[in-house]
Amino acid sequence: MTAISIMGLGKLGAPLAACFAARGFHVHAVDIDPQKVDAVNRGVAPISEPGLAELIRESDGRLKASQDPEAAVRDSDATFIVVSTPSEQTGGFSLRYVMPVAEAIGRAMRVKREYHLVVLTSTVMPGSTGTEVKNTLERVSGKRCGDDFGLCYSPEFIALGSVIRDFYNPDFLLIGESDSHAGEMLAEIYRRVCKNSAQVARMNFINAEITKLAVNTFVTTKISFANMLARICEKLPEADVNVVTSALGLDSRIGPKYLKGAVSYGGPCFPRDNRALAAVAARAGATSDLAEATDRFNRVQIKLLAELIRQYGSATETIGVLGLTYKPDTDVVEEAFGLLLAQELSAMGVPVIAYDPSADLVRALGSHKAIRAARSAPECINESSVVVLATPWPEFRDIATEQWGRHSAPRVVIDCWRALSHLDGVEGVRYVRLGFGGETERQETASSGSH
Image 1 (cartoon, helix red, strand yellow):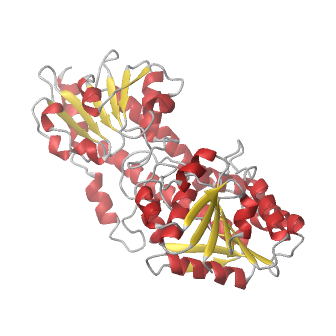
Image 2: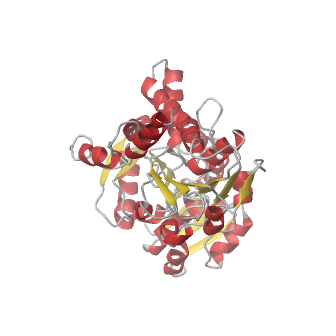
Image 3: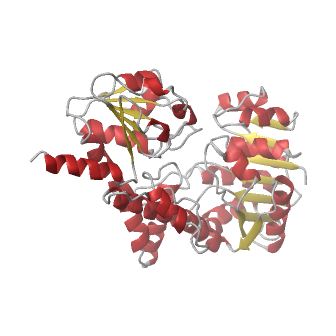
């Protein structure tokens, strides 16, 4: 097999198309957006993702794009569906973008004599692949799944900002398969494209669909546990969440990943996958207390931290928020801590100025006109009496030390990620790191001494 088609040139689809092409596959990518199609055909990255432009150049002409899904299927041996599955109010995922793509694939397979593999990469609710998606492909193509074509559900466990690295070096590969031939065909594709020797977990559709949600929900629970420890440490003199979580991660049953003890998780996957698992349980008549508690805990962190931050300045003093994206090296602000924090502070009536090196501030801030957009990080710092490091972009650590301080009352710098430790003790700066009890102790001592 040498030819692959990708349906969708979004945040995941475009990097995947480039990854396959750079590893020797001929790739026909499809998107309804003519600007994305044109960009790919000109050798330009259609979306913002580190390393994508370079990877497209490495594809050496093996990557092309069009708005014709049926032609792409006819030109390829396997098709990956990488389109959005928006969250619904109930917590589940909509197939409204998946189904038209499935119909187009079915039409192309109807006139195609060769066996074709269809891979659903988009996250869906358990039961979706083996019912709506499979039934649509069979109905439109007139062919039988498992005999005339194969179908796999294989979501990616990647993070925006590191899609290429994560895709090439997965922890494991998840394959829900219609039959063993389809599963082995996809496993062979992954063996050719991945740069490590990741284990492959192969199973039926519904187990794979549950596993996708379960993995991310477990990770969010682990993040929330570390954040709970951070809040506890902040209340106890000399307690340091870094020390606690470092020791905790040494236990092989736990491990060190995601035990940062910082702020709420966000982004396009973690929050919605957590809620989706709870929705699955509700539909099935089962309980999901842990998933629901994790979601509630994550949401309340924004308000708690906003109230904590507000204590460091007067109601009229401006608070600066550095970082609006949900993580560094991406422009995604979906459920991002920095953006939600800025909005919460603004709702409290606090003047807020914000800066992010990637996010479109006008788009990110939306209707919150009370939040000013700074043109640079130094401007954001200079106009604030309290500065919050909400997203640990590397460039924030490179800001000259003298730009953080001020000659009048010391500027408060609240470090949510403990990434600016070099500011501790700097003249003109009151450095506060979350997850550490020393600052809380000083506050309480000062408060009791004033009575």
